[in-house]
Amino acid sequence: MVEVLEDIPLDIKPEEIIRSLRLRKPNPQIAEMVNELVKASAPLARPKALYKISYVEKRDGDILEIDGVKFSSRVLRINLNDLNRVFPYVTTCGRELDGIQISEGDLLKSFCLEAIKMSALRAAIAYLAEYLQKKYALPKIARMNPGSLEDWPITEQGPLFSLLGDVEKSIGVTLKPSNLMQPLKSTSGIYFATEVTFESCQLCPREVCSGRRAAYSTEMAEKYRKL
Image (cartoon, rainbow, N blue to C red; front, side, top):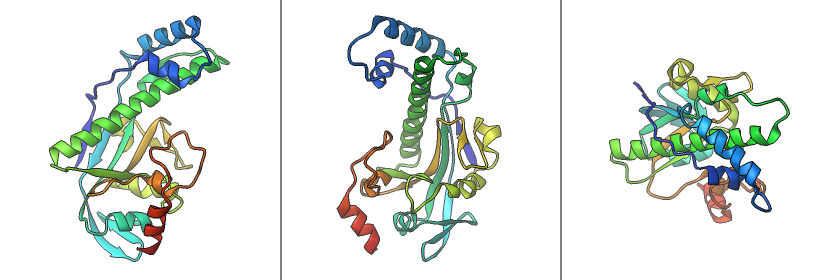
């Protein structure tokens, strides 16, 4: 059964949005614009999360079957090797912020709005993780996302969404034919219990990545190749 989480606390901090602009020096006009945009966004933003409890039913090499749906990933299979229960999910900043009108060509303001949406998405991700840990008494959890590694490509979004029913009706997130989500500031994946720290970034050698959450580990990458 799918559970939807909607009353997610959100505290948008103007200073964090300004920091994301990486200005060389303080700019009062930009600071005022950011403050006004945050003020307009705060009452509208409705970050959301959706998840369900699923079970790993079969393993065949690097193929996993979860609730009757097949996934192909060596890394995912290794991470779930000794687990039966997992938590597929989708989190989103919500569609409400799309209602804020920005003049065409105002790139700076558009960038700030995207940063605000990202702040809302991060709030949803953090809230869901904490919720799962508390509700299911999980001391430590980790997650994997389709497209975060070559080993688990973004084409696996389709099977993942099929586990979660009508995601658009539940939280307003649609999956496009390109396997990208709308709103763009949304993420999907599988949470799972773990005893060790795991981030997909630890297995990704790409040097330039704004979403990197952990440093690349040659030791860990070699470990997963050998398992």
